[in-house]
Image 1 (cartoon, rainbow, N blue to C red):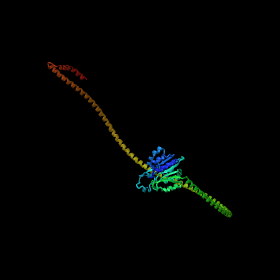
Image 2: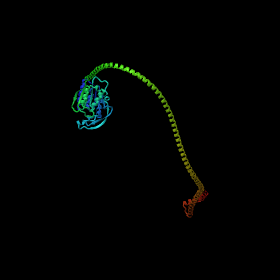
Image 3: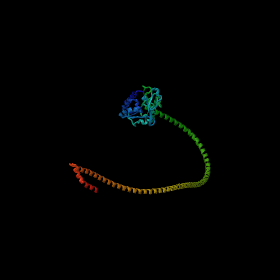
Image 4: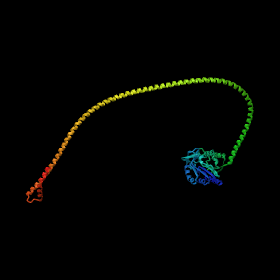
Length: 451
């Protein structure tokens, strides 16, 4: 690809010659950081850079933000929206256009990715200011395969005429779908008043061209168009004059013929007037007959409508009666079914009543048995209460007998102690105590018996 030094040299020359008012670079990321730096330092009053490749746009963004320069991350298209961007292993050849012959120039070329990028028409993408400074304007286009499309949009919108300098980096031959040969593009620009000033052929497959607009060429072209239009108008005027003279002679002859035709027409008109009067009378008669026929037709229609309404009412009445009959039959059948159901239900109720009566009798018998059982239970409870009272009495007697037996056992022990006292010459102190207690035992025994 061509060295960016060529563009920088031309940019420096323009800046030194009179300064830049507006600098627009479409596809600035492809030119490299040195070219972008030269654009940012060009001193132009209005700088606009565009780049469709997301990776190259991201690399440009910090420098543009730092310089306060507008960067539009979008591709050029006929309508706003999105379009595919084809990325190749040679990044500088990436484009919105598919390759068509590019593989022959670069045999190792291959597509590595396709991304959807924002796209806008060039009229909204450029966003040119209404007024620019005293300097000239420069437009650079470095969008592979889109050069012809961009130039057509610029010429159609009139934006191309706002620039005095044009830089193009484009393939010498069509290498993308929809692209055009460089010679045709330069010829179209030459016709539009642009003159090729410098060419850089370091890369013969992708040369760079620098063009300048020649206002005098455009003015001469406009004057030639105006002169041609004036000559054509003069020739047309002469032809018109000859036609008018010939027409005047024809008009005199035509006037005489017109007088004769007028007299003939008057006579024919009188004849036609009489014929028209007869036709008017016939028309009036036919109109009267038509009115009468219309009145009779309207009367017949009204009568037919009345009969149709009557028939419709009869049909409705018949339908209503048929519906009522169907409803009555349905109600009768429903009543019969309901009567049969009621009869079956009554039979079921009679059977249920008989079953309930039998159940009541059985319940009464069970109730009598229950009452008898309750009576027997009451007698048993009374007997049990009496037995419990007897048991308590026996328990009390048994406790008293035990106490008496214990007292008797104690008395027996004491008696044995007394006998031993009487037999022993030297009784012990314990025997004395026993005798004392034995003397008091009868009194305790009497108290126990009394209790």
